[in-house]
View 1 (cartoon, chains in turn green, purple):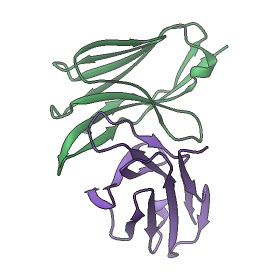
View 2 (cartoon, helix red, strand yellow; view 1 turned 120 degrees about the vertical axis):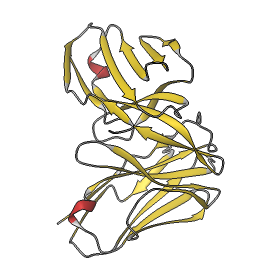
View 3 (cartoon, rainbow over the protein chains, first blue to last red; view 1 turned 45 degrees about the horizontal axis):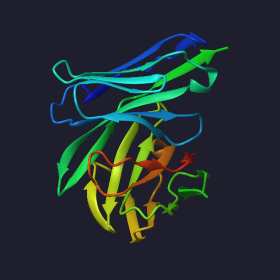
View 4 (cartoon, one colour; view 1 turned 90 degrees about the horizontal axis):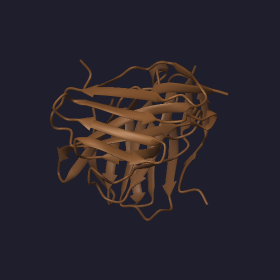
Length: 114
Length: 114
């Protein structure tokens, strides 16, 4: 079983739809949770991060973490064609020598159709 | 002004050759990383350097050797290239090694081994 599981999709939605992206993880050592967005042929860029159970909102984006269920989600409201990208969940755990290691999910490819 | 840059963007080479990929960041960060993204878009950490010292060295063949001449540069040399090395290699940097430090990714180097 991989440490971080993410449904790779692809996911196709009409413009204006609410999108729900999810990841599960198996390692309780993960402490910080992030969502990265990767446009085609580009490097990933950080979208949101959180470190506690609950919701965090930033504009049309809401990140949700449930540590008891080892489950994280990203919700996108009023989705736009410009949201079309691959969304990668990521989480960090302490890996020793004062450093943290980032582990990514496989990414979900999202297409928002005008 | 590009924050994290990589050269070359594309690299096509024959099996058995030796090649290098260069990475430079102008963000003043202390920590740099190399990631490999395979054909299924799975992004995995390979190495991490903090202040020119190796701090993360995942299970990577010895044919891969990172080198950090200074804090702003992290190069990746690959000996005896194999077909399975074909992937996109991303360099990233962050200010420190804390779990909450955002990692900034370069545009990637697409390596194709024939």
